[in-house]
Length: 108
Image 1 (cartoon, rainbow, N blue to C red):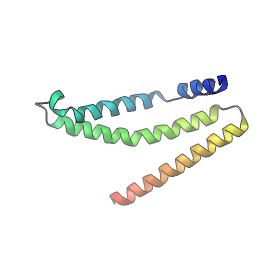
Image 2 (cartoon, rainbow, N blue to C red; image 1 turned 60 degrees about the horizontal axis):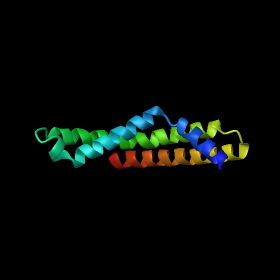
Image 3 (tube, rainbow, N blue to C red; image 1 turned 45 degrees about the vertical axis):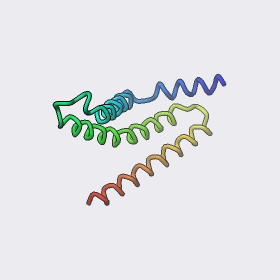
């Protein structure tokens, strides 16, 4: 159990600071949209800004998540676990690229 706790602590330390900021902005945008009448009764465009911010954060989270997977994979010492994490990071990168290509095709 100690090895698992050490791995979890190391993986959390490797999370990019920007990911925490993006997740915080995403939560803030979500609450701004849901509490529109209470927070911004006289500012109708605030919800549109919050929706744009939520969309931008939703695009940034997968990119930062893949970056985190690559950082964790590079930090592992055991070659078997490192290979497994590199495979997971490569698969996530491929999936992200596939979704990016599909998104571009849908928009065009």
